[in-house]
Image (tube, rainbow, N blue to C red; front, top):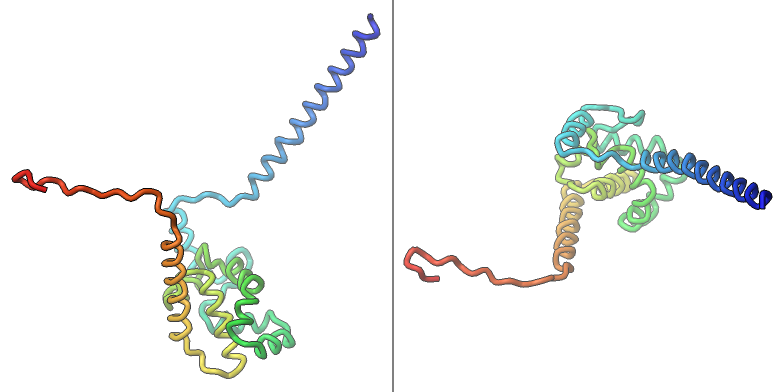
Length: 193
């Protein structure tokens, strides 16, 4: 009987040690997983950050071009000559669509199109409201520039705006109607509807 009691105490101690170790390991891991989440900011602090960012030439150590010309120059500097040649030989819309999730996403993230930067502010002034449209616009202008074609900025901006409008309408049209109600007019001063 003494032996069984000792074994039980050892088992209890082992179980408690395992639980304590589990807790000691889980707390730092759960804290670390929370650290990777973006910080929730109020509208006021987002606006304040935007106003600060649009004045900076560098954000998080990355140079931010001031306008379209500088953005295209920067992409030419960063891209190997052979890749630029391949890019210029492809059909404009198709190659820009294909590159959107590569270099397009890189521009959106590094040039801070969502948070605001002097480049995104410039493009916003041109009429481009969505970061995806800003990236597509820069890629299409670069393609035209490399091929010696007229940029026709207004035409491309109008096309991107039209796409964004149609996409918003499609999303609205695709929403499911949960319930329709008819609002009754309140009676007028004489008690009539």
